[in-house]
Image: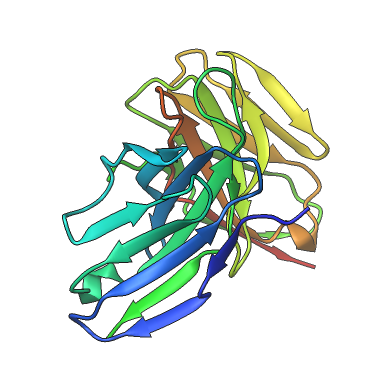
Length: 116
Length: 111
């Protein structure tokens, strides 16, 4: 079956612009995670959805970052007034559910965001 | 954000050699995971460890969950060229099961 897909694969924007990054999770997965990976680092947690609600947004760096998942499937990460420091690979992962027993998170290929 | 301490940062070895990398944390985790990431791809799960002291193998890979639940190691035996990539440890815990990743180990294998 299809894995996690992310679009676009690459996004180049100018400082101050608004961007949207999309994630299509594996069908039937109720849990969805966003991570950010800077060059030479491991992924860092941003936000987690269980269904439609953001159950944990403690990793969002500031109020320029926002994410939605209105129908409990596709999610969009939104970044306002982009800064050069926002340049990174944004990874999305989904799992069957969260909590309780271990549920493997399956990662998409990421969106590489470059802010000029 | 929090990242786990992973070492070594990079390794350059000959095909057929064994390698070992480890990861430490100041926090306790319920689950330790090891991932491999190829260029332009997301991390892929290699091994999951659920119990302190657990030793698990997956083919040429062997990993252990430390007794203190604050560390783990990954061994790769008889390395081959396709082992090239970046290896990450990750701790998982809490109600959301979010992952806390290590800083990564870059592995290069010379045929």
